Length: 154
Image 1 (cartoon, one colour):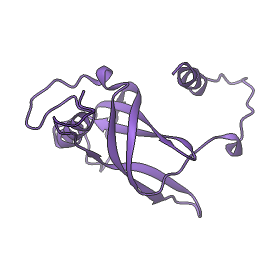
Image 2 (spheres, rainbow, N blue to C red):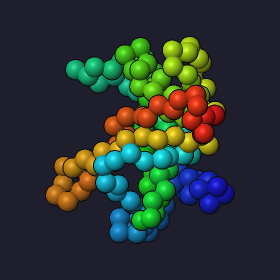
Image 3 (cartoon, rainbow, N blue to C red):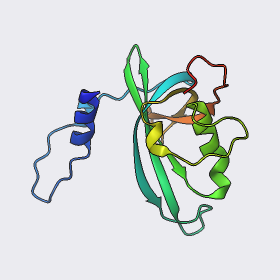
Image 4 (tube, one colour):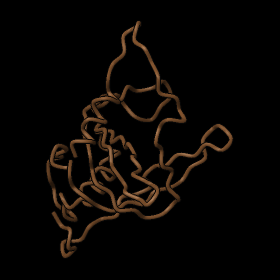
């Protein structure tokens, strides 16, 4: 875990206008997953704000930024998911909390985002084609809900 925290500190380092840069895209470890179901661990949470875009559907609202880690034979894959905190997206937020065992079906609970860090669950990931030839990226299609009897119920 200490190594992950060090990585996060380095990745979030802010440059000033005179900073030196070195890392090339080829130097980054980026694991692209095939579509499928994967176990994950929540490794970080941060607060943000979603700014409404002209013609967009979502209003300006708070945003929870969750980073998950999926361990694979090819290495660890990290996915970042944004949860927009407004009524239309309540189902997605609820599914996430159910997937990590912090909410039961039909239960009304506060969104304790800090408690999500360290929790584990299962999600369905898709492999999507990017705008450039040969570029792919992953995103969580849906969160697999834990049931109370599951061995990993939090």
